[in-house]
Length: 108
Image (cartoon, rainbow, N blue to C red; front, side, top):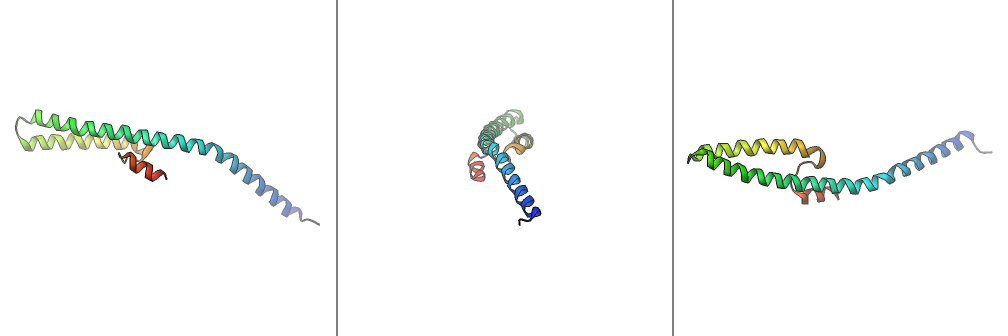
């Protein structure tokens, strides 16, 4: 004669397994979308960082009036502020590596 408690446990484990399998199916599609979202965020972040570094260099040079120390300070402050902003913006999405190759390696 079968143990009713054992049958109940087996049935419960089977139901849990089915629920887990059903819950995992949407995550496979979401994982692909998530990877695309992360890579896109990295590419946009990298482009914005490049534009920031180049722009802050130009800004520092124009505003310094020939003083190299002021140009370097302006460049550093502007780049640092933009980098903090980019990290806070893209960090939750992709980790803010600002290198799409790192994001792809991290995803695999």
